[in-house]
Image 1 (tube, rainbow, N blue to C red):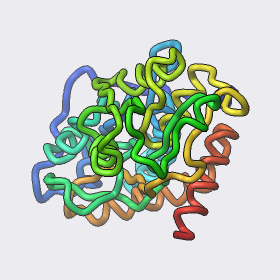
Image 2: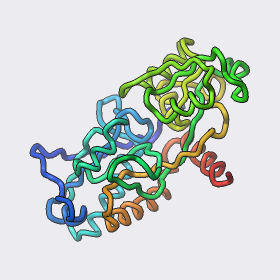
Image 3: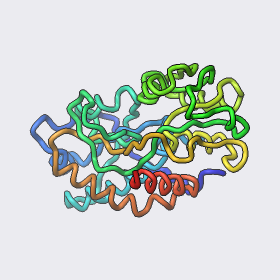
Image 4: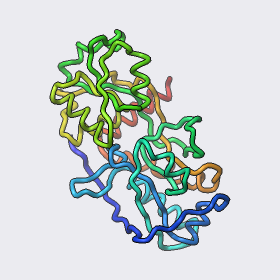
Length: 280
C-alpha cells in the first residue's frame, strides 16, 4: 500500500516576521491588513503533516490550508494571501496559538475542555483513538482483556496514551519513545521485533506503517479493529475569536467533502472509526 495523490502546496515564506494582532483585534482584521496567514503544522504526524522525500511539508493539513485560503480570500475581498508555515510539535502546539505566533494549528489535536491554555478548538475534522500496532503473528499473544503482564508496549513519553496504558495495563512493560521521531522509531521497533506493539492513535500508526511499506493485509495489523477510545481532532484556535472560528469551521465542512480523495486506506479507516464512534 502506498500513498497516492500526495499534494504539496508551494508556500511563500516571508523573510521578515510580522507580528500577529494584539489582544482585542480579530484574526480577520489582521488578515485584511497584512494578507499573511500563519499556520502551525507538525512534521511528525502522518498523514496530517510530515516531510516528503524532498523535505517539503505535506499532508492532509496542507490540503486543508488550501481550502481555508480560498475561504479567507472570499471573506476579506482580496486576491492574494501569503501562507507562512511554522513547525509545531506535541509540546508547543498550544503555546504557539496562545502567544499569537500562529493563527491556527492543524494536526491530530484531541478536542477537550481543559488544556491549561487560552485557546479553543474548531469543530471536529477527524476521529481516531488508541490502538496497538503489531505483527499479525503476535496477535494471539496480546489479549487486551488481560493485564498484558510482561508484554512490551511502545508509547510516546508524556502522551495521553501513556497515561491510559499505565491506568489500564499497569503490569505491561512500557518502552517510552520521545521527540519528533519517537512514533517512527516505535513503529520500526515493532518491525525489528524489539517490542511487541506500538500504541498510539490508530490513524497515526497506520500512516507511519504505510510510509514504511508495511503490508496491513497480511503482515501487520491494528488491534482492536475499532479504537479503544474515540478522540475527535480539531484545529487549535485563539480564544474568543468567534468570527475566525466560524470561518475555519466552514472550511472544515468543505474539507470533509473532499478528504476521501486521499488514500484508500485512510478513507476506509476514517469511515470505520467515525461510524463506530458515532454508534457508541
